Length: 244
Length: 248
Ligand SMILES: Nc1ncnc2c1ncn2[C@@H]1O[C@H](COP(=O)(O)OP(=O)(O)OP(=O)(O)O)[C@@H](O)[C@H]1O
Ligand SMILES: [Mg+2]
Image 1 (cartoon, each protein chain N blue to C red):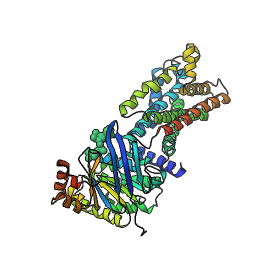
Image 2 (cartoon, rainbow over the protein chains, first blue to last red):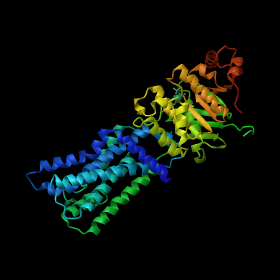
Image 3 (cartoon, rainbow over the protein chains, first blue to last red):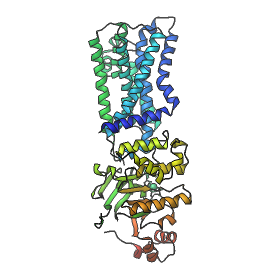
């Protein structure tokens, strides 16, 4: 692995996205619009105040997962991946290059989403806003790295979408969005402790309500980062230079 | 560089499956250095599988593939072997120049290389265009241009001239011979028989085996035919044992 090849890959992925206005809109605007929709649905109630933080975790996570997995899958299908792996590009260069490119987009995406939720949707945040953005970015990058990993096990775009109910939906159901996690049946609560999205939701809720100190939030952030690192390593390890 | 050249590629007893389908069953061959060697054979005979094995992206069941003195696929070879896949493998959502700039960075080749390969593949006029908006022939030339980056010692080209007009094809074959004269070894697969006649050496493939390994002239003499088309048909039709030359 070399920094120049990793960064060249990051630059290339960003150039590709720059030529695709739809994907830019999907990445940067759609999560905010969906958060706005949720806020609108619950505008006569106080529900948004309690689910709003979770929405900041949810929509960027899903969008990043989809866009990343389909982008990398396309690379596999068009033969450019095979070509790259016959060249002196490290497997880590490719995975990290993608992670950095989408990480940069995640910073923009999450900043827009948090700003939108606070200023337009009126979400009250007790804790530090920068910490909220940091957790939201980590959560979006998590979506990216899980997408990179999932695309290794898919051959078609359709198969990638099939991973949604397997990898993404359980995390949503168990993440404490529908029911606070401490009210879940024991088995499901333990299970949800092991899912990374739960920790993102917990951290965002804690910051929004100011119910926990920064050390707690940083602890949750570390868990998400560990998942990111794990997914990057696993995604690199599952890349094969030789295929049957 | 005047020492007698080692073969660029030596394949011995190679068994490989494409997907689950057994394609190569004990294939052996030698590809001399600094020549343009043509690989021809019917569709599905295993040309692409063999090329993938030489480049080191194909899982092989057994046998050895030695490229420039090293096992195929070893890290040392990754900047010394250029590969053009049968379908252009380039990014459609990047311009021609952006494609070349990226692959140049991956190969660690000099910056001036991009201008050189654009010139060699006659892509100057479309360098700023999105690759996805190019014609099929232009796209395959972008793919070829990528393979030329970094001046690899061995070029493995899978049907690089498909979809090109006669003028461009002639220019590319002139380029191939120019590269060979400069010390590059080339393996070029093709379906076009008048291209086969332009090769220094020919490998005829059928059903995952090498049917003949000869020069175009040698092939004509051995089959008693007047053109490569007829020689090919004769070899495919009734497998004349006299025409078969075992590699090694
Ligand atoms: N992607 C693939 N997955 C599974 N099997 C494949 C794949 N590509 C080719 N095959 C099988 O492998 C055999 C050899 O294919 P190969 O691509 O090596 O032939 P080829 O000589 O390059 O043909 P062509 O001239 O049509 O390109 C074919 O009979 C085909 O059935
Ligand atoms: Mg082929």
